Length: 248
Image (tube, rainbow, N blue to C red; front, side, top):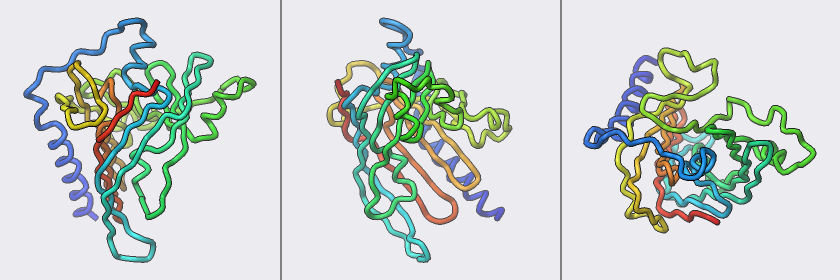
């Protein structure tokens, strides 16, 4: 058990070193400044417009039930904004597909249907039935979001963390999303990405006892890479953004 824990920590260390090895070459990026309003700035930070999509490509590994064999496959996966609706100072996004679908992948798995709720600078990943409440004009939206669904809190800065309050004061930082130092992002190979602005990529890591999740986030673009590793039964994901469409 001790060797397994050391192995997990080694994997986390290697992932973080890889994510941040070049960050010291660049000065710390300035926070995004509002150009129209504070709310508009938030929308630009994570551009979830109707019709927007992100296409990822990479490798998945998994095991079938009651089998020791490890399967590996090159895969392409899409994340898409289907509908957007604003009500009661929140914005709801009906979503289809996400890179984290690929954790515990198996042949024939379909893109997930879920929602993202944006309230101020916080983004919550919620079940599909929750996002449908935003479309229901008769729903007062009480209790719409729960901190257990928190997936992103902006602006991102090195050393910031966000999670459920029960885990916020853990000295080991586990069960929280921990933001690491940004590095300059080169999106030249990404189809559809047209930007003259300097882009920065933040590694955001969440470690639990059984697994590690690592999201790379680029303000103004979205998720640029997703890594997942499970320390028991094999489930591994490493996919990168290869195509982006900004929507309408």
